[in-house]
Length: 378
Image (tube, rainbow, N blue to C red; front, side, top):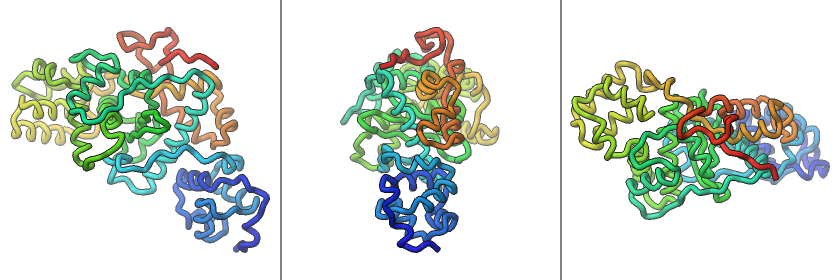
């Protein structure tokens, strides 16, 4: 066991304890587990992370070795931290604390990459609204207008429109975490949406709409979490499936087959359409329950048929910036930012390539090479 004398030295005064915490949580280690691997006590790791203790070069090298982070990473400035408020992970109560910590820290790394690269270009101005004391239907309609959608037309390529409105949309490679879809918050006066873009596109779209309503309405939560969730769900439904249009198009008798056809037109899940039909009283409660039982029996709760034909819903800007400055050399980016190469590669892969963006139609990017927005170097 190293002594306290050996741990308190002056040779690494720039060591940042918050970076030790970040590396540890990304590697899914407890303080006790990291301490054992490094050969110190758990209280020492705790004090290091709190900025109360500076360790020797030898101990810091062991921390770097055991976490897989470059040594220079631990002398970087503190990361821009996402607020851990009542809205963060509000729907992910089933997530383990270790998974929550991993998601937040990886998302912060993704944000750090995008924010750093964005400093080299003219940054997209924020035109995304932030409101107080508006009803959910009005918010949904305002959001449609702000993103350039008609009042009662199907919404396609929602992530693309959010990014062009200045929302920082980030994808994390989180398919291995059951129950995680997204979280959102305002950071540095910018709306930030963190997505599990490996979900089916109809599910990603619904989640993005839900979070967009939260960003507009609940930037400062004043009511209960349950009320905020109901508002976001209702607002997301109205945004994706406007009542006026749905009352025209969901025509009784309502069956899974007829809803499957509407799914392809509106780009939303059959489950969402069933719920919307019930909200608008097109179907009665017993029909709503029956259709949901059939959906469960068919195994459609997690993934429905026809989702693959809807087109992807993935953030693009982060990967576009990487391609602009590094091409395919993601390793050079990782080395320059003092980050583990596998972590950076996984984050970049989670974002859309130019070839995955829509090639035609009203939501096609304005330039022929598939860029989501024309960046101009400073």
